[in-house]
Image (cartoon, rainbow, N blue to C red; front, side):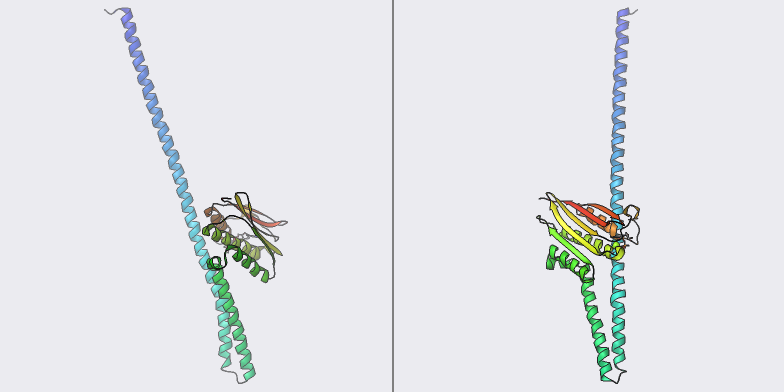
Length: 264
Ligand SMILES: Nc1ncnc2c1ncn2[C@@H]1O[C@H](COP(=O)(O)OP(=O)(O)OP(=O)(O)O)[C@@H](O)[C@H]1O
Ligand SMILES: [Mg+2]
């Protein structure tokens, strides 16, 4: 028969062992659960990143499609129609007997063809980043504003920054200015469009504003395939590491601000 002290010791030993075993199991279980949670969180994050990437890709593809549609519309509406008119005038010449009338028709046709040349130059300039190569970023923006001014709307352009920008950033900003000022012309009926590109310490600030009719940005559906301009601005801003903010109302008009961190 065992002595009570030995029995107590055996109890303690088994109790202790059971406790250690339980504790170890609890720790192993905790680690397993924690790892599983961590894994799930990582997977969620990966899924989110993937979804974002997919969304971005689809927006980029859609905006490329939209750009193509715009080019085809420009070619059809501006070039196609003008060429048909010029062809009509030139055709008409063979049926005319009066030299004065022939000269008038030829003059008209030549005038139309002159406009076509300008239109093509304009379309090419809008499309090609070559304008940045040929004239430089600042000059290209001034030229864009001058072209708008030639259409009868006052423009102000203020460019003052010190940092050297990457080519990609310059192209992104140029495209944003093109779209934002184009939107002002297309939708807002403003009397003034302003572009300012300035620097505050390590931030580059691009502000494009118009004093037109404004719109409700919060209610604008950026996923709509028919209007890709604003989502294009958002994507371009993100791609060049910039932050976009849009302020618009019927009283103030529209302000589009992009801020980009730069090395001062
Ligand atoms: N400066 C602005 N003033 C007033 N309304 C604007 C302005 N910019 C955008 N909007 C409004 O926001 C909408 C979306 O603009 P967005 O540039 O995305 O598309 P869009 O100009 O209609 O078409 P797209 O740019 O694809 O040719 C416009 O249809 C217009 O109603
Ligand atoms: Mg637009």
